[in-house]
Image 1 (tube, rainbow, N blue to C red):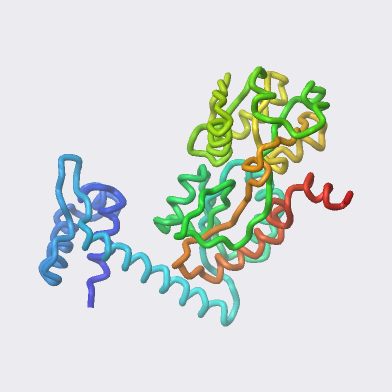
Image 2 (cartoon, rainbow, N blue to C red; image 1 turned 60 degrees about the vertical axis):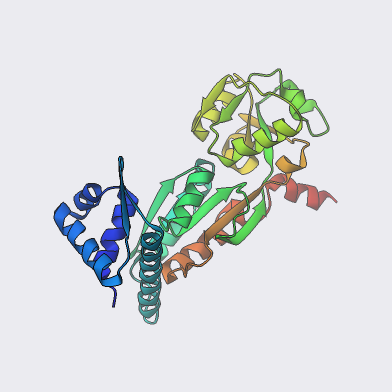
Length: 313
């Protein structure tokens, strides 16, 4: 029988990158962490840690044991969650990684209705770009992630997907609004432009299309904030790229307009709710997933503009 405390210490060493960092987080002596992991090494006759100038890292055997412990912990949590569900869902925790572009849609209704329906379940929302959110899912740091335009990854399980094109967002009365046909990136090259930073799905898509079209897009503003992008456009300074639903409120108020883009990579962008492929979700996480799927505009249907096109056919 593997020593569960030793495995927990090993996981924390992997996460913190050092014995001391793990000990501080766990509120124990460094010697206690070192001693228990050494005992586990002796029992299994394997080396679990390698020391280097920056601290320690797990060997392949250590990584295998750490992953085993995290998977076992998830399975135990799911089993306890299902046992609670036999009576009523009155306790639990759900951790969600969310890109900023989803926040308004998340907060407006589904999160409120979920927390009202299940007052015993705590929610942790982590703001993250697509790269960080995918890493959190893989590392079991969160249960669910809301992703915009993620790359394909066999370690992720997609529970719901809708088409949410990456559009050009412009100030009201902007000359590009009357362009007619969907625009190429070349058509906007001379306008002041704001871009999200590279770790975000929106920026990665724009980079991909600009590379295919052999175009260098020079941004006047770089940011990691959707709110900054909105204010950049709303103030009339310039244009940016964003899904329609991320600026739904501003569109309704007449502050911002949407201009479709021609490239199929941009027009075919998807929004997804994902979890780790081999991870069994708790009953609380499954209940939260159902609320997000039915309550968020991003995941109930394709983008409003697309739905309007279907209705007019």
